[in-house]
Image (cartoon, rainbow, N blue to C red; front, side):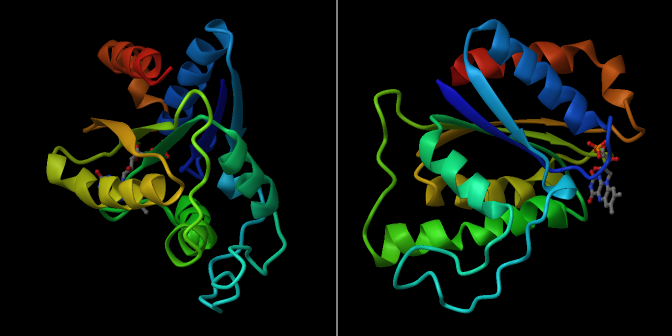
Length: 188
Ligand SMILES: Cc1cc2nc3c(=O)[nH]c(=O)nc-3n(C[C@H](O)[C@H](O)[C@H](O)COP(=O)(O)O)c2cc1C
């Protein structure tokens, strides 16, 4: 199976990257292919709401989203691993999600859903946040849900970790790695 993964954080070696790298190691050990996109390190412009995708399902902006569009079409499983910023997802991953308006146009205006493939399509959302309030994850989860459904992923699991703030603090939380492993095995 092919897995496309997205890192929400701009912080290298941060908590969501540590968990995503761990998820990737579980996936590779299971014999599947994973491609990780780091929106902070590539060139993805925000959506212009120009309406260009409405008739074709294709975005008029030609930047690094071109590779992401292909990966989203061709993959069977999808992971977002991200911190919460101001109760939502960071701007870098939000730009990728907003540019999926092209898939929204394709699905809802042009009535063409991305074909399921023989393995179906499933998603996993991993969230970390510094606060100790579960409500802090709700907006990020809602945005990711809209993303997954738009790219024709009917089901996703969300796992979230509160009170994780300093770079690498997640390493002190062994239960997080167990939860990620179980979620990844469930995803596959
Ligand atoms: C701009 C900014 C906004 C943040 N807003 C929130 C927030 O609303 N809720 C929360 O729980 N944590 C918030 N945090 C804390 C991060 O989610 C936390 O430090 C997380 O562990 C960072 O993950 P990373 O290491 O993968 O980047 C914020 C951090 C930054 C830099």
